[in-house]
Image (cartoon, rainbow, N blue to C red; front, top):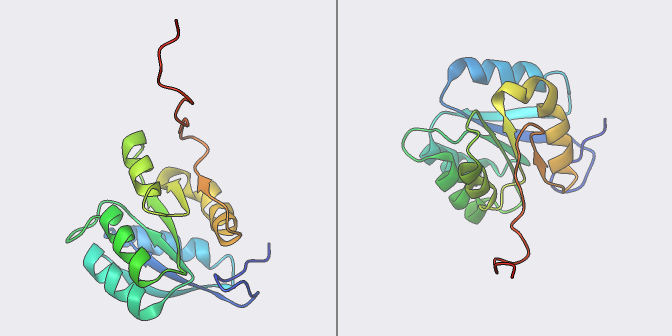
Length: 153
């Protein structure tokens, strides 16, 4: 698997990991070490710090939890989009609520992985979003809106 940075080159991909659960940081670090081109350039544990670090570091990829202290991940993603436009955002959360997932993706995020599926889906999700495509965990059922809300007669 060849990964490209947000700039489209085959150089290393700079990753910012944002989660308030320390064991999860360790797990994600272990997963990313399987791909030497993925470099963790920062780890933060709250939403406000996430926005600041995204602005300062301008990572290629941001792995972002939703349930964060100080500022939730969805609002952090909205702010990050304004200060680090080239960064790809991949949500990593255990939240399976369709409303929450749709709101998360409406921020302009590039994907959503359920944490319990991360072992099999995290690396493919990263590859997909770095290719400019959207990734949503296979176990989630996000149905597009129906073409018409008019009742049938």
